[in-house]
Amino acid sequence: GRQDQSIVVSGESGAGKTESAKKLLRYITWRVASAAGGTKHDRRRSVGQTNAAAALNARILDSSPILESLGNAKTVRNHNSSRFGKFTKIDFDARAAPKRLRLVGASVETYLLERSRVTRQAEGERNYHIFYQLLAGASAAERQRWRLLPAASAPYVSGCV
View: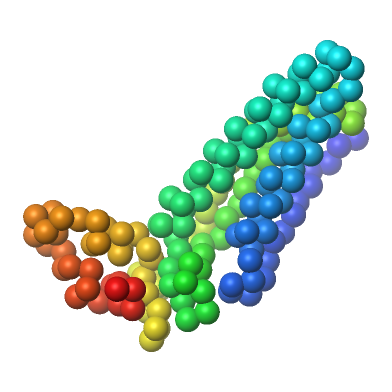
């Protein structure tokens, strides 16, 4: 029978965990799509499965900039360091025929790892990207209304302007 499987991507800061996870996701969705082939009927379904796998892969990867904005920060070792853990679950149809895979969905859960970074940063580091993006993207009128400093004077985004 089929069993649940897991892949753990771990490593030091700047080791390439995020990029490795993206490559794994691309491989898994490609593998699912290629496993759907076989008879002429299966090949027609395979095209649909390939398109569905590509769309799911794109949707998961398209969420990365939002997650990175909210959960990445500049550190001494990495200018785009993830400050959160990410659990990506990919769901398959357990009733699919043997040696056939059918991708049915995915979800991403995040876990904030460094709450302390919100209130203080080490020398040469800065807060989460979202704070800089908010300050740099807001007009002078918006900053005044929201009582925010310009990005160049805000201690929360030190080291990024």
